Structures are given as C-alpha cells and as structure tokens.
Length: 308
Image (cartoon, rainbow, N blue to C red; front, top):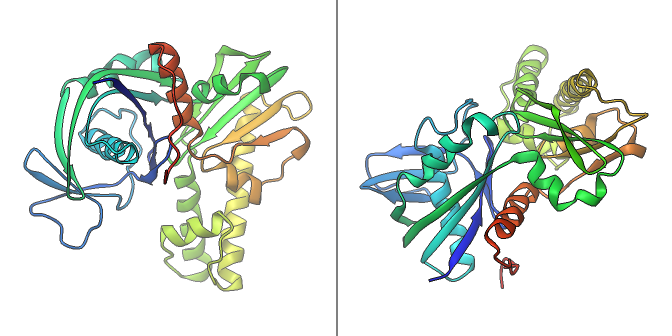
C-alpha cells in the first residue's frame, strides 16, 4: 500500500484540506446523533462535527478535538480518492512563532495513536499514520509562491483566532521578524456583536455577521448593516495599526494578505491597493503543506479535483 499524503490546516474557525473545508467544532454525545449530518464514531464514542468552532488556545494538543477533526478531514480526502483504507502521512502546521517550541509535541500528538479505526457518516475508515510533518503556517504558503516575494514583503495570515505575520525579503524569510497577535476574525465578530447590542439592542448570531463580512446578501436593516460596517472598519484599522507597529510601511513593503480576515480588510479597510495582494484561496495553506510534504518525501503529487 503506497503512502497517501493528506494536508490539514487546523484553524480555530475551520479545518481546511486541499479540497475540503468544515467548521472546527466538536461536540461529544452519549448516543448516536439522530439529526446531525456530520457524525463521527470512534473508540465507542459519538461526536457531532462542525457545530461551532474551537476557542483559542496556545496549545492545540491539549485535548483530543484536533485529532477527531483530523480523522474527519482524512475521511473527506480519502472519499475523494475512492478509499476507505490508507497509509497516511499527515502534513500539518503551527503558527510561525510556535513551531520551534511545539513542533515535536504536535507531531507526537498524532502519532501516539498510529492506527485509527473509525466511522464517519456511516462509512468505516482504517488509517495507519506512517508519519507527520509539521510546517510553519505562513511560510508553507510563501514557499509555493516564492517568486512573488522579491523585494521587501510582509505576509499576513488572518485566521479565526490569530493573526500571523512575517517579513520575506528577496524570497527569504527574516527570522527575527515573525509575529503572532490574538487579532483573528473572531475578535471582529465579538466587537460587532457588542456594537449591535449597544446601538441597536440586538443579539445577532455569528453566522449572520460572517455573511455580512463576506459581502453576502443578508437582508439586514440599514442600521444593523451600518453597525456591522462601522465595527468592521475599526477592526480593519486595528489590524493595519498592528502591522505598522511590526514594521509595515506601504511605501516600501508589499503586503500579502490571506486567511479569512483578508476579505474584511478588502471590504472595510483603508488600504493602498497598489502594493497589496490578496490570496482568495482558503485552501492555500493546506496546499502549501501538501507541497512541502511531497518534496520532503519525494512523492509526486497528482492533483485530485473534487467531483472527478
């Protein structure tokens, strides 16, 4: 049996693979869920997958949630390949500033249970983990687009829980200029909810706010939309201010924005677009992990397009 590389981007808001995305929520159940479409059964326990999201923690290995979510991610990718059994090499990542200290712990977190037999949505899967590679989040994307990073660049990845940023000068990362801030998009959602409660006396669900931030139709009243726009603009300015504190200068530096927060800056931020580049692909980081793992293992990666 040949090794299958599966890349998983473990976000606080969503889990992303090269082809799939789903919310990073895990809820344990005593019995089999009857209404949930996404359910996992492992080691005699049932879990609902995809409701809510993970709260921020500076240790992703502190509970079993990311292992459970990874099992689902592997099942999704294997289904696309027409497989229910596989030897899998996981390609995962951590924020730039965490890799040095937590890399081995995160690797061991997955390898401590090398054989996984579980059922996801009525299908049995058998996975043997043959290895785990842990890469820095931002650099994993940059290395697949390294020709775009000539001159002075700042790469900013804004996820649900954190914002990671780094400088890349003439295609080389600058080791002393890597940063992580707890300024993920969830902070924006909380600020909007607080603003709407204060100005409109309304409790608005997170999903509705997220739709508005993406620019999707929500049929909200003008005062609610204005409240969202105002709080989102303040969040965008907070992001830009923090980037300037880290050394960003729009006259000298090319800014590359990615992650879920990039659309907030595009839609609500005051940005000099001449020197700012947006990565729209939500799977970009997972694709970077996949590329690095294929290069590490010397395995050529044939692209598996969803639906084929």
